[in-house]
Length: 180
Picture (spheres, one colour):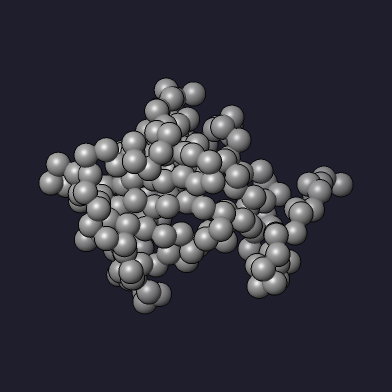
């Protein structure tokens, strides 16, 4: 297991020395999470604010541990292959929420929206995904990120109906057995 990384106890501690630059108004945050811009030492950063109240993916996958924070803390981001950069520079976890501070790489992101992107970029994404899978081929989830039942059901009709109704996501079904 990679080394463990420190977690701040508050957003204020995470942002020590940074100046608030404003909320990000137009981003492809399909989960509902909110983002803000900050600057520290002349460098731009983006802060993702995690909360069950505003992030349907967290609710649908029953993420009560703030998985991006757990990935930082457990060293998983640091274990990524060189072709991938999480951009994460620090995290905070506190009662009711968490925050992830990342270098602002917005000029290099895939453009917003659902327009097709060039074949060369598509091939690069596939190559990097293959690198990720190869790097973690024998990996075992010792950190406790997301149980298979939650991964398999979070895009289900039952979860969508629960979200639309404003209720808690329905309990995950018992693990299925595919062996005969």
